Length: 623
Image (cartoon, rainbow, N blue to C red; front, side, top):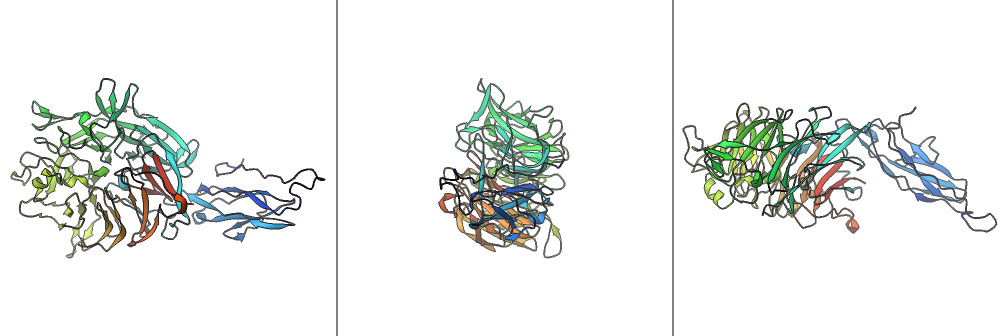
């Protein structure tokens, strides 16, 4: 039998018989009219698509199918089945001319989208990779030539049962229900996980991570995540874990007795069922005399924290980091790791063990990681010990408001750090570094030909900091002794994560433009090479980049203020003054998709753009 894996329509041709032959009514003598035009279709490479038309008019009707306006030999039926699709067929337009003795008419064209292209990408973690560059270099469908309101816009909204604060994740060519699908995963603050077919929006599986007798957490007296807290942090996916791959997510709940729980869940990618040993209750303690300590140990109180920072998967270990609810004491700064296969706790670090505060939230950005397995984080306002030990480290081990590097080879430990010269003063007025997220740059050669491994970070004080990961700079009360400090580069302050592409770093500060800072000789230019004409209100924007290798690059960014209409923007990556598209351009609000959430970042994969909303995920693509 012929394979039935291709997409197909089952529309029927409506015969135009009219009324009784003697009445003079019906369609006798009528020219053709299109009652149902061919519908756009999406297939994977190697599959066929079937386009079908429904027409009326006096019989007999003749049909001629067209591809990109040219007649197709032998395509003269009410339906046309394509040959197995190749990458080159993506974007082809199919129409049909229907004729009879009284005239002819041509249907509107329907576009064929070919997914599963060579190099089809996965998005398995926050901002695409552990460097957190937010770049997808395998995008062949969305280009500056195809992203315009005339042919690109809102396709659908995937419904969900709560706020979607986490970045949607995408797995390509996943075997589901006997066929290969591209799948998008969505998590909500109601504690739910959804999987959808990424190409046609079909709902696949829904799972709740809220146990019976419990509910998602309340807002904990804080207006940052309301009205409930369930899954806030972007999950992480390991395609090689267990039979089908595993999605890891942290969910917060409250039981009938008023106790709060944080649990790490490991879910089968196909069924969303809990894997063996899942979930595990997150609990930890660490030596210290700081906030919420007793008998020389600081305790992790699950009710005082939420997992906002995107999860990181490094060398088989899932790392979580913990934010406070507003600045409601007592809390400290935690990084906790779990073995991805057994879910056994593998490491605990407190970065303010003898002080207070110092949470890690990073506007939802993930912990970054280098090839050696070191983690990088920007710590929020909290205790910093200006008295240093013989190694130049804070004497009591408190790294509030610092840029830290954490070694993971043995027990988790801070291996290096940078703290601003006015660290304590900025921390005291909540002008902290932890409102932004770190990003690692690829190896770069400096003016002397020396290879430098750098990282960037920015927070509320308007500086753009560049550190050498081999020697981050430590603390100096007189100056910021780091690789590069650009004061005033981001005057509105940063409550977001940056992106990188082809020697350029992209930032959008609060109330400011989206800015492109060019790199040369391992240094950032002090002023942007280009910037958007429009500005981004609080919280700025966490951009993403799509490109085909080093060409056809687009920077995607969201206006996403809570309670205001969200707007998706697309810019030419080589010149941000050239806006290619925004979701307000189409007439009649065609592409409007609801209000924004604070720290949303778009996901771009395989010809689609996915954007979290207060009640689902908006999907954009070619119309």
